[in-house]
Image (cartoon, rainbow, N blue to C red; front, side, top):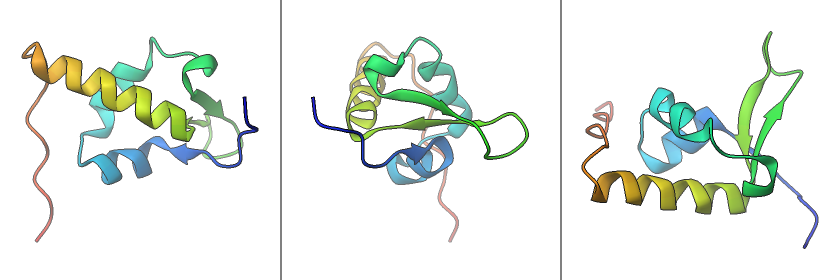
Length: 80
């Protein structure tokens, strides 16, 4: 397994994927470090959820499964 060289905060991943950050947080609760989901301390008072590249890939799969099963919210509108 290659070393982790970068992690991406949940708010960055939400913007990247065009998804609601709160919903991604709910989906990430059942993810583990082995899945590429980490909790990073020192960012904000309580830390922040972050993902490796593999974690983003795994999260996309979870999102696809949720959409396929009709359990996904509408994508948030982007600012114009």
